[in-house]
Length: 245
Image (cartoon, rainbow, N blue to C red; front, side, top):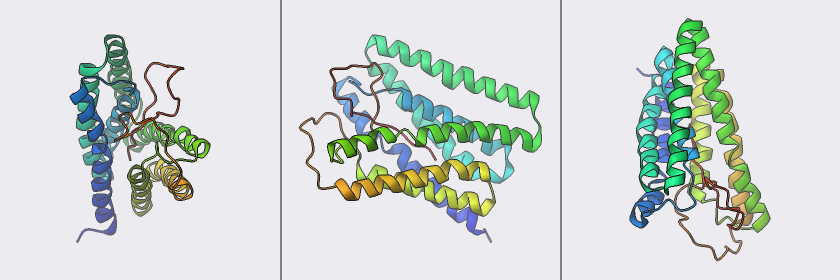
């Protein structure tokens, strides 16, 4: 009979898949309009690297096959998002997107795999890969702070969708529980961070849910991202981001 960690891991897989798919409405509108406008490819490129590292971690760590499966799915989805950026972004941004993707998702990932294969063995290898993945996870989990600051500043949750905040909270909590059950500190630290930050987002949402939204109504379905190229005359609070597990 499967133990509790298996069932928690399966639930975590389902929630993470929903999070990976949450930008689909945004990309559907991008496809219809034929432009990425002010949306950035960087969060998707970073998420692709993050999924790749966690998939590698799950493969070399026999206990973490559930981590490998969901992040393997994430690799496929994030690759599609990056390809769509390469298709619909303006020429200048398209070039930057391609360069960033090659550096982060090819060169850095290849370097991580080669170095850990040559320099480490057994638990030391999986530990080194896990630390890299956890570090990137924590950085990505802190990225909503700018959106949270905007909520407080504007007294409106217009740019922090409830479902996104809820799944962020739920995802961190489920994978934190999974990490506790399998006694994996490396997996627990970043997801514990995500759980706490997700809870903070829900508290802010409860406080400011009745705030008056701004009149700006551009491609707001999906995940918020910082513009790829800084545009001072644009409203600075249009920030969208993806969150892995």
